Amino acid sequence: MSAIPTHIDFRRNVQSVEPQVPASVRKATTRFLDTRAAVVDVIGQESWQALRQAGHDVRLHTINHLDYYLARLEEEVTRAGGHVHWARDAQEANRIVLEIAQEHRVKRVVKAKSMVTEEIGLNRTLVDAGVQTLETDLGEYIVQLAGTGPSHIMVPAIHLTKEGIADLFREKLGLDALPEAARLAALARAQLRQEFLAADMGITGANFLVAETGTLVLVTNEGNGRMCTTLPPLHVAVAGIDKVVPDLESLNVLLKLLPRSATGQKMSAYTAFITGPRRTEEENGPKEFHLVLLDNGRTIILQDEITRETLLCIRCGACLNVCPVYNHVGGHAYGFAYSGPIGAILLPQLVGTKVAADLPFASSLCGACADICPVKIPIVEILLRLRRRVVEGDTVEPAVSPATLRLGVQMVARAMSIPWLYDLAGQLLRIAQAPFRRGAWLPSLPPPLNRWTMARPLPALRADWRAAWRRRTPEGRTRQRRIRIALVAALASAAAYVGWRLIQRQDRGE
Ligand code: SF4
Image (cartoon, rainbow, N blue to C red; front, side, top):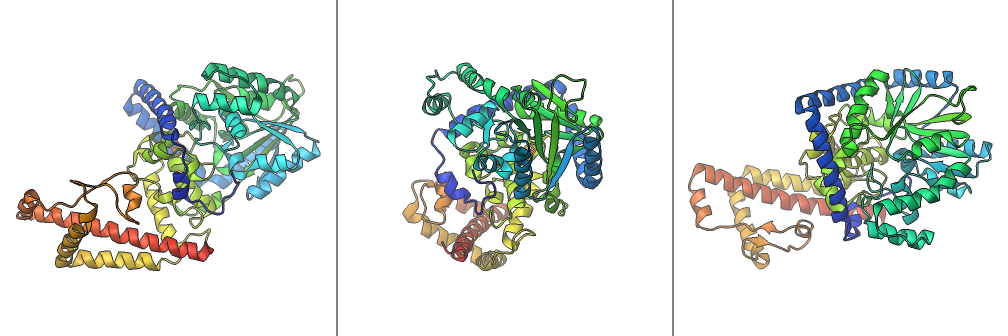
């Protein structure tokens, strides 16, 4: 998967989703949602909501005072004997990590799961420079073998079945494996064990960075994070600048929210606190510790007071689990490291709405993501804000020409202001639907409306005696009118959107 995509075509990606993906994804997300609901029940709804509010407040406070907390973090990491590097973008972060590797003549790297290194495409940089780079989280190890990227923030191989993973092990590792989770995990563990011991450098991300103490916090379930940070003589952590938290007290709130929201656990199996490299009196740990703090568009995100709350995210993945769109298409359709609702709001801000114009629309706006988010990110508001930017342009990319969209909106506004035009539109739609109507439904419509009917049938517009009777009452007339407005609006918007997409394609010379 490319580090920074030049264009994300969500619709095209959806067409290539493999048939087993929705069932595999739903099986896992349902399990996570059930276990999450159970641990939240133990706490009680009232306390859980209070905890969410506390998490939101801590994160928002930190993001609003990021300059202060980052300076404090640098001071404390340096005081603990670590080295802090600042990277403006993906290219700079990759260069810094590669230079550290080359200075230490690193040949083999072991990596713990880190979404930010997926974001910058670090593996490719290291491999291209001749450094063997191995993912050691089981899910990441599997998707690395498959040659793809993660399809879920917490569960990178969520889209694969056990049978598919067994086939992959047979094909790539020459291992005959039964399609059983424990057996597959044991095989991977046996493969990885020697790699930990032989590695020259361990790379991790960070779940949190505590400014008060300069501590990096890693939350994992497999223990590979600890192996990556203790066995190799060199530890490099790459983290977004948004990962900082003020102090251990704030961390305590977030550590209650993260595992419960992510996997339905009270605590993850391993929570590692790493403050600087190994001290002289200590037996374990790396001799050197480097922290690369990545901006990569985050300071631009900060400039908008609504979208800045995207940076509150603690990457729990709960919004993916609950999202009907994500459950239907899986993570690869989003075309980049982050997927689901957080991907739909984060990616357009990281890469620009011109590159990821589809993603703010990859949502039914049902609001389930915002309801489940442990730090109360207003995802729906941010999606709407980004939809607006798609039309008007954003601070990252120049505006696209919205001529057809403007025309569509003007047509709808006109239709909505002239009552006889509503009625006429309703009559015309009823006539137009006749060739496509099958009973009460329209199962298949021509473009652009086929975008809807490819997924589900559209109810046909009916003019039966019940509707005629309803029209005789004021409420009935209002309802009929609303239905017509909605249909006219949907038709005009769809036509305008298709026109706008055609202009975009023309601009790109496709
Ligand atoms: S947006 Fe909220 S629910 Fe989604 S991954 Fe981030 S913290 Fe979790």
